[in-house]
Length: 217
View: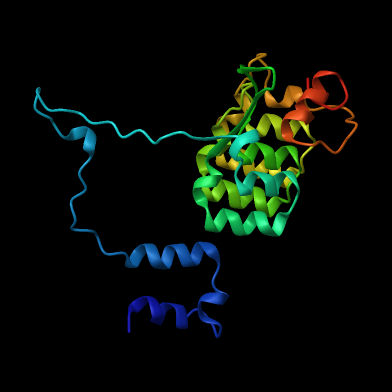
């Protein structure tokens, strides 16, 4: 048996359960064997002057709301939370798929563009679903919609719970100093009072806000 096991047993009748966090940390840190594996920093590797550098760019996934909206987005919009959780696990690509909507009479004009994480905040999804979306696609926390807003902007604007605000800040700490297209920080979007209405879709919620009917500007 390892000396770790012996130390744990000697620490009390409950073993590891009786040890403090500091004691556990000290115990296992002392017993760590130094690694013989050499770690190479890619920045220290010299490439020949004529070497071809290939950059891998992840493709942007995008669907038109009126033509081929994803199941995940529709489930968020209709607040089918149990189905949303299942879709996050089954279809991870949908978590990073942008949904956009164009003007009916001028399809060259964009009406809105959102990720599922933006929509989940707007439609006030439970904390567990916000956490699941961020776990599946952490980059979503720093992604900006067509108005230059991160999910954190929308969370402050829609009066999200402290737990959700914390989740978004933990995923993207610099989000608190991100500015939207109108040069506003997330904290500046926190309304004193918001008249809540059920939207037909996330875009219509923003459209109503533009006319002063919700917290959207």
